[in-house]
Image 1 (cartoon, helix red, strand yellow):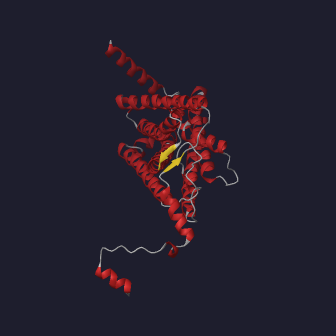
Image 2 (cartoon, helix red, strand yellow):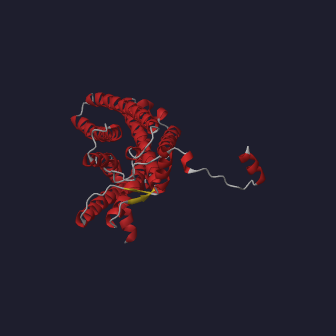
Image 3 (cartoon, one colour):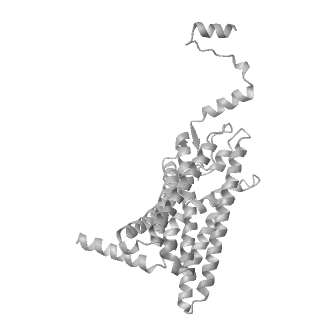
Length: 340
């Protein structure tokens, strides 16, 4: 009653309760959570020479991804003959690959170059959001690309109906929106958790499983459950991709030309191999048991699903594509002749 009267007399009066009224564990949790202003990423090496080696290695991978995906984007955008559903999806894939590798690699290179490990709290949350957004959208897009090839090879008469321009735009929009909503859900849920187990992230970029290890509350199980649901859904899409390629292989085996069969297999098998590598490494990274906590193993798995696909996809999706290679050759020749 006295507190109420005092509040009425002086509305601007701030009432502070003694620290002993708050449980010690809760005070410690609140203090530790509020004190985290930055995270420490994984250091690849202690010596300066190995740090610079990491910088140049990542720079080479990054430039290869920029060059390959940049050429595909430019070629498809400039050549009207490539404005078809298959190349439209390939254009979106290259954009997602560029964004995905640009989210993680530049910060890691900068840390190695300047001999630091720090990333701000906001920068870490931003990195988690954009990486999830682009990776999830890319996986959904790979599913649509498998469906595109299935319709083109197994149901060619229905290709124009099932994959018209409007349908392709709607599919691409669904991919981007689904990736955005998934990333927003997981990022908001992860960074709403109280963190009190330090700020060291055992990875070269901010990754949700590593952030969850720093949580001091059982509420992290909520995010772990969401991860299981998301990965289960992703595994369902993987089954769909495998079934699509099985139907494609059956149709290819009926091709009388041995050269045609070889071309189809040499194109589809690398696609399926990249998707399988991506899915298996993501599932292992996010669902591996706590008993398996080797930093080197975790680093290798993360590199396989975060760096290899953006750098390799341009080769996989263009090395057997004569139309794309001819269009690229014409583009380069036109640029050279204009400069002369």
